[in-house]
Image (cartoon, rainbow, N blue to C red; front, side, top):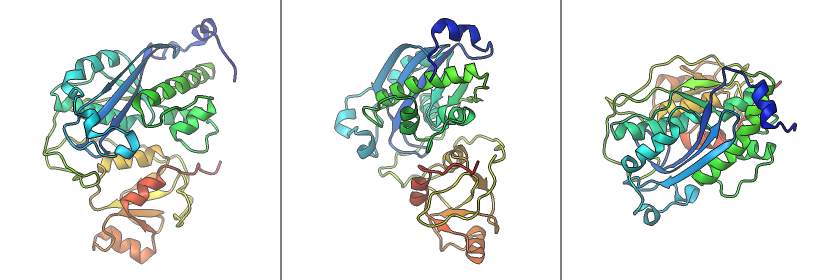
Length: 324
């Protein structure tokens, strides 16, 4: 890997590139619309990706902490932590005027935006950059798009996976050479607009992970058209094998993870979200395969493979790249 000093990078830096970045990681009580942040970390970087400073905080979610086996933050640890409104100003100051950078940035942005909406405020973020998308733009030879794979590619050592501060550090260290490679090759950065929530329908916290309602009337839902999947359909999903980019995935019925978030994760993995079931559908995801919905009925008639939401979220962790 070519090492470039700051004078070299400044000379070849595209003028259209942002002047600063906020590399962010949040740990949460779960993945659904009404889940909460339990910890957050921000590494502020300059235009060339150099670290300026970093910040970390625990956050009292005012509910069950969720998957403690993942983030390690118990109710006892979080009991004395500040509430989100108490850290909102400091968090905002570290995001202000910068591009939010995260690994699966849609997830982090939605969690942050919802917390600010609950606090009747808005995060000062106008653009986000997903490092998964950037890795794809750079055609990095990664076995998958996990953070650990990106870190290993650039020789960055993870010390505490799913610790917000360490994950943000790892991502910041991996983002800098990615940014330099993009600038050197004049690759367009995959920047996306961040729209703050303008309304929020709060409800009682759910005590158990996996039991949240996927949608409540009156809650905020963005309206957008998804871009077409860039990969050809490789065919049907086969049991005990990984998903492959380009597969057509349909969803039916309620999901514990917010449906839009689940679809966003599907698209970012390189899969196609199908709005109906046909002979071309690779997989149907449903928690109620016996329900007489049009999708489940068609799936049975076509012999389309069916998995539940839990199995699907596991499959999403290791999606095989499309045949090149």
